Image (cartoon, rainbow, N blue to C red):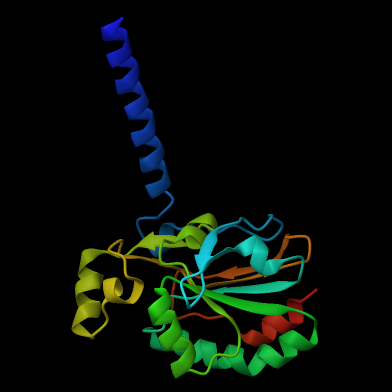
Length: 206
């Protein structure tokens, strides 16, 4: 009986280990290997945090309203900042169509607060430092050690920005989710330099 119990406990441990590894496997080895969810799927739910650190979920944020979800790499990324500026200009048009816009990045709540203030962002930005949302959407990938080192040479510390040591980022993406939670528009690109023209967002709003 004792031996059976030990074997059962060992098997249970293996199962738990397997589940943990399975979760990690949702972070791709490179940006090119990500598998973003596509148009027509239902929006997955995930926990994110606001700039004060309070937790909420994507479903609560959308709350039956047409929502534009924008995933970006972080406030430290100059291309993200430039794209954010373009989104800010398009924001009134998005609102005029009865939609809301929510941005999500792996920045910590503290880094998110700094980004909101520095760039006077009028729409909400949420922290996904644990990559819950990025993984749920199939956008998360591991940043290789050489790139992490190169970034540090530029004064960019991914661990400081996110408050985590996972060295992972989302590929930039934009999703439009309708009031039923269905994804009606999806755009992503493993090349972070390529960003969606905000005019396409306005054009594709239901």
